[in-house]
Amino acid sequence: MVQITTGETLPFDYLTVATGATPRLPSVTGQDLEGIFCLRNVTDAIRLKSFIRQRNARRAVIVGAGLISLEVCEAFRRLGLETTVIYRRDLPLRRLGKDFAEQIVMELESNGANFLGDTGLESFEPTSSGAIIVHTSNGSLESDLVLIGIGVVPEVSLASEAGIELGPTGAIVVNEYMRTNFPFIYAAGDCCECFHRISRKPVYAPLGDIANKQGRIAGANIGGQNVLFPGIVGSLCFKVFDLEVASTGLTLEEAEKVGFKADSVTIQGVSKAHSYPGSRELQIRLVTDTESGRILGAQSVGGDGVVSRINALAVALTGGLSIEELAYMDLAYAPPFSGAWDPIHIAAQQLLK
Image (cartoon, rainbow, N blue to C red; front, side):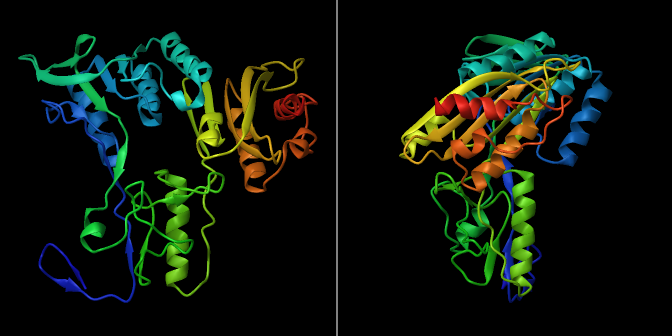
């Protein structure tokens, strides 16, 4: 039985828990002031946009430097807001490597945004004019609005109270059919864990495409089918101004942490043939298992062509391809899209050396 807030109880044969995630909050004084926002859904976006318009906002502070924060930074700058990003670590997306993270900061600053690394949030304070004072470990900033974007946590309170098993990530444990430890209760989306096909470990990956796939598979199995969710290879991408950033699989550090004897190479290439107009620089980092030769991950940053290449490498990861296979893989070639030797080929061949 499910009991709802009215006191009514609903019987069920099958139940799907899809409670999603909630924004992580910093637990500082003043975080509930008017003008401080989280961005989790369309309603949040409408409220934020209305506030900017109604208050004629000119200054914004973003707390955090994850994917959502950086994308919103671009949106704020395009609206003409003076925008400052504060982040407790030295660089955003440090997981991708210091070199790639520095390119993200350069892109922010070349588009008029201010990035303050190694800066901790301490509190918020209202002013008589309706502005907000943001107190940090590196001084105070005055702003018309604040976006808090420091991540999300799985919403699992209801599941936990019901005795549904939670995993090491804090999210709900599900098997490949999206079933929980109760055979008639399923879970899908941002409230549950995923199996990472490269690390072979459970991970928390609250992304919309994964949630869609999990929901469809849970529904299919409840409907009598026998569909498996095979897990993820950890692909993600985002754009900040004119810079594409994407990643799949494991970084070198992550690969070594889970026990692989790994190596990596980083190459600089171009998105199109050198002779073709509009070609822009990109960098690709490939990570490989030195014992098996299998590709373990890839990260890339550049002007364009980054996401398409990471998607190709995600397929290579899923298929368990080796660096030798990648080095001569039959990729589609035409000068508007790549050189005769694609940056993927070049990176793989560098690793073979």
